[in-house]
Length: 232
DNA sequence: GCGACAG
DNA sequence: ATCTTGTCGC
Image (cartoon, rainbow, N blue to C red; front, side):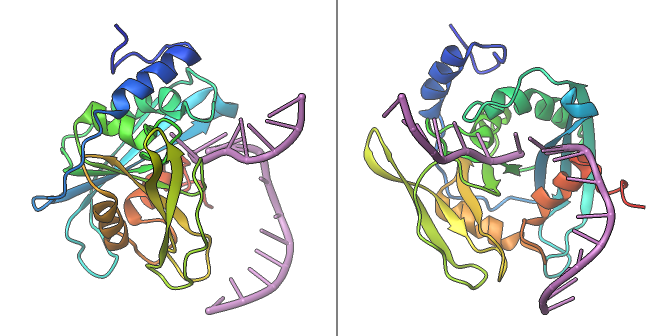
């Protein structure tokens, strides 16, 4: 039987696994004990030959408005194992992300991932898959759309429009198109694992600093792409 | 058959 | 994702 930790699967096997795991993405609403929030992202080096996973752990609550203390961060590099295939991103990125998490001394209570949660053709985007593995609440924050339809959200920070898609149960609200900052393209927020869309939106807004992306994801992005030291 | 398509 | 300079705007 194909399991959660199998990564080297054929496309059809991977799709079958996603359909089966999607039912295990449970929803919960209480996150009272959050003290550490992690941000995860993957970058590539040497023309894509090397996969670079980065995790940044931030303290909650923030020290000031949108100002978070970095508690810990970790990077893991390994040979790239899979090409990018829309819909199968987790098989390319999650193994490296897990290895980066293994290097942490801290265990976060909430994880923010650069990519979709359930806003995925089979309702199991990279944020959901990672959440299942870590058994932690996760939120997917993507910069562009993978699937679903939506209207244009309002112009003010915090305005959002529902992201809907036709699934096996008819019309389903799978996420939100959020205006995280005035005058910029919106981000796509969706529940990853163990939380609702309303809760995902609340935390995403609460983690917003001065930029388009929430701090956890933004900092992980910088570390994964070496933008934190690449500048001269 | 013709598009669409996270990172 | 990544390859890449300058440039428009707050």
